[in-house]
Image (cartoon, rainbow, N blue to C red; front, side):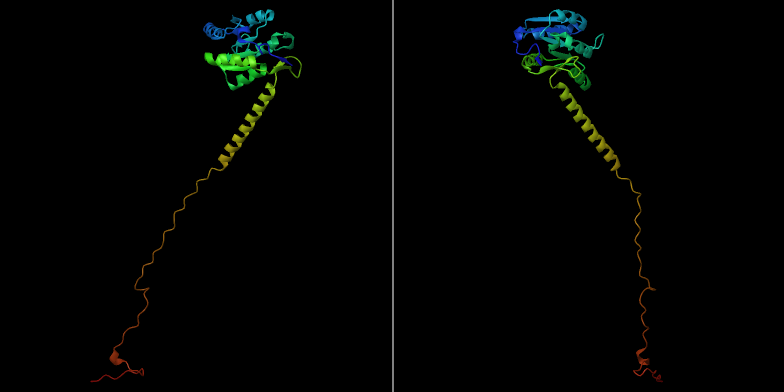
Length: 228
């Protein structure tokens, strides 16, 4: 395995290549890098022009946009990471793009990018990232099919992140399905049965035996004859 070509170098020893089709962006990146006082800064509009120059004089660092056409960012990286492109294949690459979606970052890392920065990038951040590159001890290793070089540990890290994302999505799907099942059904409201109030009436009242004239009552049960 081999270290990248900027590892262990001082900033003033760096030979840097900038690739961006935007003239204003070229000027901004060049101005920010100039504060680091590298040995040389070259600027190119297209990856084709940059490749022609880099094949003759491989730089120590490449800053590039994630191009769309005529040569995409992934195609450009596959070209310079080809095992037959030594020593250019060992050049570290920083992608500076305004379209840093998760899918784009994963494609860039798989293709052999060391880091991705989002436009607009702050000068202090760019300087810190360039310094970090010179101390990044990850080595290049040959791919499983033996066709190109990959950054040590990147493929395993991406696979682990994808596995975690897949597991998280599965958990979310299960929770969503469970939430749908657990939604309570609206029960038909049953009106409460009205309480039947019973009024006490004369019919319901207990019968009271009629009172007899006490003069007509004898203890032996016979009527006493009326006195005239």
